[in-house]
Image 1: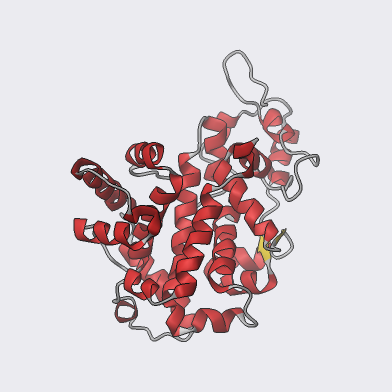
Image 2: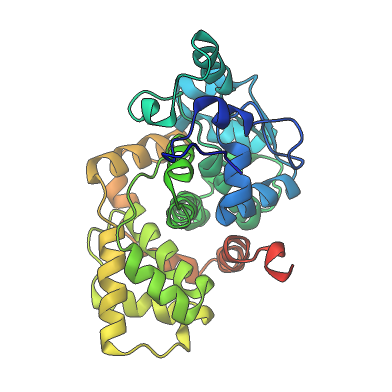
Length: 320
């Protein structure tokens, strides 16, 4: 619990006091906000627990190489099972020491510690293990042309995870901690998605969000009703759900808004990553097939989708 003054201001020294060495195993006390997010954000906690259970560990010793160019580091992370992070609490401690009990959270609205992306990279790790198992060579597994949809599913899952983790954010402190631990800063369609989750459960709606991000990363710009119907029919999680016309329109609208991204950035990111794996530069041609048609031919992808959605939606604490 964060102590508050009468004006509800959070002092920097109070924020720093939340970071101690007595937290749960796997929590990083020298990473700003990590312990708080693990405690207060169920999605953050589920992904952390799943990554640890799969044998991944977190290190600040490789942070310089990773943050120099994160995009080219994924294969190393997956092969070594080490996820880098910045030990960025020291900067806040230095600021507090310069003038004790003076600085407040409000002073750090625009100037804040350099971010970490443990949630995003941990989601990649969880997805890779679910989709590919433990291959002898991470690079060879990712370069297998028959597994293209599983490669792209890894990024779609990281984006889905960050989206639902952002939906769990409540209050200024939670928001501030999340802002320096995630790529996502907008939550389009949150109200509609939340209402659909309340009615049908997280897992089936998470599948539709995952599929939307999958199409997004296959450079599909629009969520048509035909495409939505294909998404719903593909998974056993949603194939038996009866949605009214109004509900389908609500879901299609929400997914269409979620898919609004910088198209040039998505394409360029995919081109760099896939050409590292030996794919040709003609990325639009490579990503032209319908991803659900590719997934229908990939039994490992179908089983992996079920696993990663279970990780996202199932929390041991729910039974406590």
